[in-house]
Image (cartoon, rainbow, N blue to C red; front, side, top):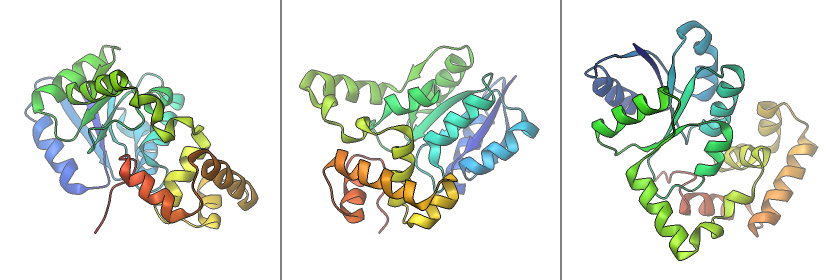
Length: 214
């Protein structure tokens, strides 16, 4: 039996995934979390084999949560799930330890294939994302994705800034000094050739790293 944990900040999405997975043979949903922080607390108790991880969530976000899960529980596999098809940073998720990458619009059959493949220790990439990546490589666009140049810590700071966190909030969340936060902020602004938080947010929305909220 494959024990699956759902991690997504939208209850409706978790409910939809649970309805799909409950009808799948040899798959058991053992629990849910609405954040990466919540997932890390529940994993020792729930003991999942696999985590379906939303990429864009408040707090530490899906990439950092994936990294910590894989670091602390190497026997647990992670499939990253995004609402976007442009795959802005699959390499970051791969570096964090995710073995699968799906879109939220994928068919149920593809999700089942992904779960079985990843649990067996093999990578799985959504057909839709794979096509986008292939086209990007052919056109030479993949080298232009701006967030690929950021380090893991710079990515964390970037995600928190986009979520509206101030320097002190980021300092508390990441357990680093406000001065260090400012250093990371300056570095990522320089790498992305921007000057303001507003520009960063627009860039993040453009490349699917953040979701637009009306």
